[in-house]
Image 1 (cartoon, one colour):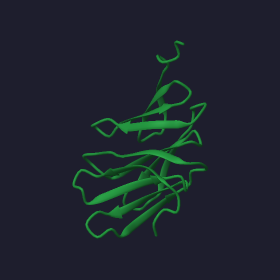
Image 2: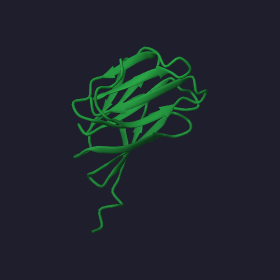
Image 3: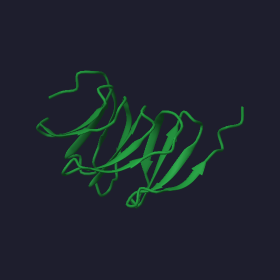
Length: 133
């Protein structure tokens, strides 16, 4: 099944075999790129899923960021939610993995970025350089 609400982001894994979409319907969906068949629905956010990424080049994890102020790490094979990152005061708007796949970053409307340890789910740093108004 396709999303029933507008899409907000999309990404390929490194090989291009999998494609993931984020939506206002509060889910992300993983598809097989060549057939278009849906493999997984990632459900658990309580608001719009606005951003996502694969942990390329590995491709075994997907991170989603939401207007519910959380980011989640998912298994790209089982669809299991492995971690929920909490700490931002407002909506998460952007995110990415580093190239080692060990750290991830989220940016928020709260004017901060956070660096996370992917495996433990712990916040490593909060970067507050954009607060000057």
